[in-house]
Image (cartoon, rainbow, N blue to C red; front, side):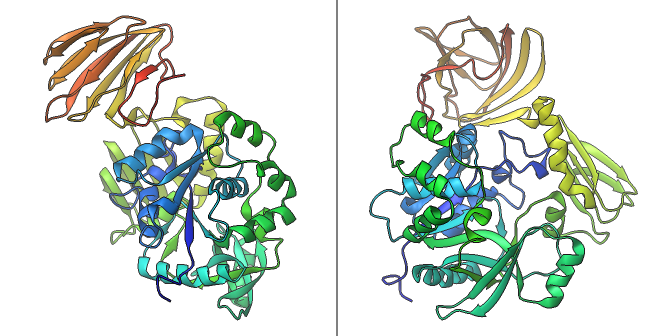
Length: 474
């Protein structure tokens, strides 16, 4: 098949989840898809780069939630992926509404395009085999099928859904006969013994018009809800629409009901990287079966994953354990209980603990800051500004700030006065005063920021101007 007659694909990357099973490294405001678990790229960056050779950036969209907009934009920005569309749901409603929204926002001229839907946080080892499978699936989708990839199972895993495949189809692939939810171990063993079962990859291809027809047939409430949406819809109108949409997955809503579903069996080194135990299996273990990441001193442990973000972590005699230590939270659990991490996070969230939402160190397009200490009426941060970058021109209604430069030279604007602040010098920014911090140098600017006031959260920032995608605060 030549490039001229190849089906035209429009890529949809679903990036709205939080990946709670990777707590404490993942947080609701720093989700799994932006973690660098398997190299220098985040899972989202790797997914984008994997499909870009086949799908150009102008026909590639990331669908995420409005609450994660900044961290997703930052992740794309740092990889130079700024030409990719970013479509934001006002709230998560599972995968069927996310894909339906994408079909609406694709706009005119894409009626016969093939929507290629990928989770943002999966791992694929063999990119060439993936591209070959993509071409085969695209031909099936062009013929009118709702297509999914079926992963050839290597073990009776209870963490995946399964697809029962039937006879070969004239256009290639196999007819999908049934979908099974995550089974018991005995049932998973029976699937593998019987044969013809594949792991459900969560990746789909279908013509846009075929998908919209299936949506109208199987999810009429959702189809009716998104019918009036189009490119340029306002956030307010979209939020009103989403309040009335059902919460349902694409599998449950359409794929399990439709009679034109095809599965393409594949074996390209896939993992959904769903848990810490899955990461253990992907990363090369030592001769004791351990995966050691970070500053770890271990004596005699076996078959364990031990991750230390900053501090030294010492372990002795562990077997089949997961230990993950971050600056403000630590997880210790048996490897066969990693699926329960989501329940732990649910309880931490219910208690409104900050550790469910964010890390002490927060990345920003201009650099980063780390919360060092805090209490009633004060907060202390270490702020690092990258060379040539500056923060937004901003003010705060309920806090004042005191900056002490530690390294580099700070260009500071307060009101209509600009000055340079050298190491060991400081400056005070009063309440309700427009100010800006800039690093004009060639080395990182480091300063200590002391905030004082009756409210010290990040939403007390009124942006007046910004060098990045964050417009003035409304």
